[in-house]
Length: 452
Image (cartoon, rainbow, N blue to C red; front, side):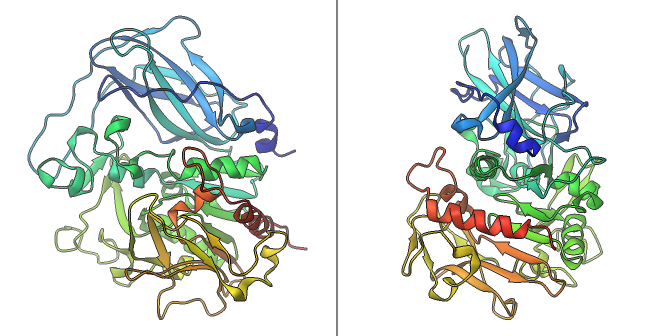
């Protein structure tokens, strides 16, 4: 039994998803996006006004449908005294200071903690908001000196922070003070209160959690990492049979793209389980704790056109996403949950991944295109691509495809963020599709099969 299957056979928790606290009532950030078993998790916590609190650490998974397992409480008994930490001063211009709060809580990471996506649940124990909570998510990685899991799942931490407007600024004008976006955002700040977060900053609970629940329910051999880890340690991608991006993985550094390109050329299979992935090039500063995105090359002081913070496809030389995934974002954008449907193509029915799915032509995947989607790009289409599902739209089509790279590697691209809602119905009932679930299972079993 692989570690994921064994972990999900354990008892899940009840009541871990509660009511969320209003802005600044309780909030925290972690010192690092990921940790290893045996490390220590450092939290920077503020309560405003000062209040008592406690921390519960959960691993997210399937767990018989309960969705999480409690790993530890901090403190073991009683609660802690919170302090109202200073908030960054609101300034004009495209900047936001990091919180610069001290480490308030240090929690040992068990040596037996299985790789996964975890949350520190901060629960108020006194004051007018007692019983309300906030989350600080993080990843536990698999030891790098141990056996490699069949699938490595990358979590999109940079994208979540790009949209996070805690302190008044994000990389977007739409949720930044004075409608002036930041060009640099810090990881040393909490996520904004749940009620104030835009959908893309609610990592991992919009796209990634549905995929995670499905993968762990099916018992796949998995390990988890973050995009920041791949930037620092591109060699850590090696040794896995399938490299998978999760959800909305929009913001990459050149080092991240280099790492995936290297593995693709080496014959390693890829799966993009969302859309709009590897779209903007960013840079990292301050020991990877600050993300830089000028967005317009004329504003970026970096002289090297290959290092500019702009669209990958506009770099010099250009690095269009379709060269990695086979599809790419082309203005496919709507509102989450709008009625846009994938239609089965007739030509794919004989493909082995269709076996036992129950699909018959014609067939529709209801509501699973959006809220951003990718399509085949004219002039960049893989010559042997199989298009399984297609959507026609005046802004952009959408395509769910598979193709084979000249290295022999195979690439699966879902072409839509909402495809994960068809794999698991948490928070979005009515979108689940057992035919799609069997199809994805067939695909992943094939993509992780050991070569004879």
